[in-house]
Each structure stands twice: as structure tokens, then as C-alpha cells.
Image (cartoon, rainbow, N blue to C red; front, side, top):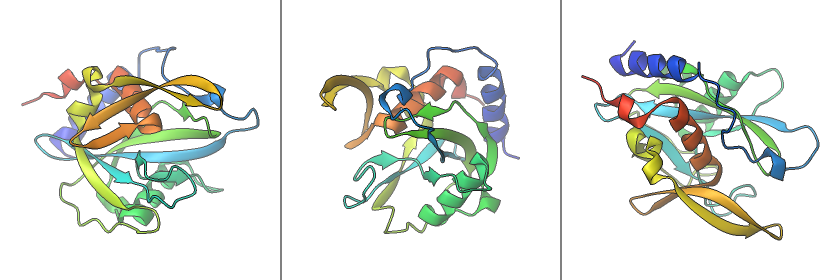
Length: 201
């Protein structure tokens, strides 16, 4: 294992021992039927300054067009969340499971579109030869982990959705707009892992 993996795993285990009842969740905005399970991969690069791999969805996608997202998608029958996140990362970016060191599942996030998303935190080697699937990924980038976990960078915004004013978070970074589900998952993770605790020798 790597120094980063061991450090993150320690912070992850410590942070997930806390009872945090006020985490962000949008399940109250979704349909009342059984939520559909999904999983995403929070792939942290093993650098001196670790980053997180994110993707842009194509503008012509039916679901979440043009948005910044984690690699991920629906959990297929017979899969668990880790298996689904690894499969989707392979399908979308060509990341092989053998290159992923899984730390664990962090807090679920219920979406307004009726999904129950399980984020999987993991580390990956830096500079993997990624192969984006053009049907699902128009672009990808890496954002510093400390930046997205710093609450000072979580900007509250409002919009009108389904006839009501709704609040959401936005994390602007180098002209990119990280918002909605992705920003909320980062905000929840920042409650478990402090950006300041990522400093290590």
C-alpha cells in the first residue's frame, strides 16, 4: 500500500466513527417510490498533492447532460456498490480494478431524480493512461483533493426547480463548475475528512 492510502484510510475510519445527522441529502426532492441504487468512484490520485478524477458528461446525454460528475452509474443486479463503481470507472475512463485501492464506502446521497448513491473512496496511481468513453464522457480533469474538501470553496447557490426555490452548492475551479450531487458528496466527505488533515510528511 502507499503512504497516501494508509493516511486517507486512517482519516476515513476516524471520521466515519462520528455521528453526523445533518449531512446533505436531496432524497426529499425525489419520487416517493423505492430509490434506485447507484455508485460512484471518488478516485484520489497518489501524488504529493492528491487530486480527484472527475468527468464532464456529454451535452447530449439524457441524464445530467454537460455536468461534472464522478465516474459511476446504476448498480446492476448481483453487484454491490464497490463492484458497480469499479465497473463504471472502467467503462467510462478505462480504469482497471487492479489499479484501484478501495478505502471504503462513505455516506449515501439521495438525489432528486430518485437515486440512492453510494460514493466509494479509493486511490489510484498518478497519470494512469485514461481512455474516456465518448458516449458517456466528453472530458475529464483532476482537481486537488484539499481544494474540494475545503468548506471555504463550497459556495451556496439557489435556483428555481419544479416551481420552488432550491439551494445547492457549487465549487468553482479553474473555469470548471462542480455543483449539485458531486459538490454535495464532496461537502459530506469534508465532514468526515478535514482538508487540513491531508497535510502529512
